[in-house]
Image (cartoon, rainbow, N blue to C red):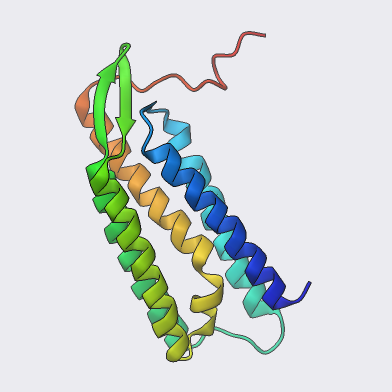
Length: 172
């Protein structure tokens, strides 16, 4: 598989994940700690691997422009993750904490996507091709991790217990 095919496949996988994540965020669900962080951690690891893979294939290397645009991308990602995490409604139900995104959460995602697209275009125009082509999974993972961290901290302040992890409560 060549680099363009790999990038196209990465974008399709990320797009499918985004649709899945958006649908789940707008549904009412119990807050399970593991579910706040597992997918973001996986995406961050994949994103770092993608950047590493892109730089280890020959003459491609991080430039000052790549580092600058990656910092800008991650700063914007943290901002939108924070806004979305603060917008999620937390409430007690059945003795545990539940969550549900709302229109502000959805707008936060839409603005986040628009900002990421603009950063990708601007980064590419400034010669930061690695950030434009290989940092999508990292950006998405950091965004979800920050959102999860904000929800986690808000949940702790609520005093309502987290829902049990279904993987931990299965009867054998």
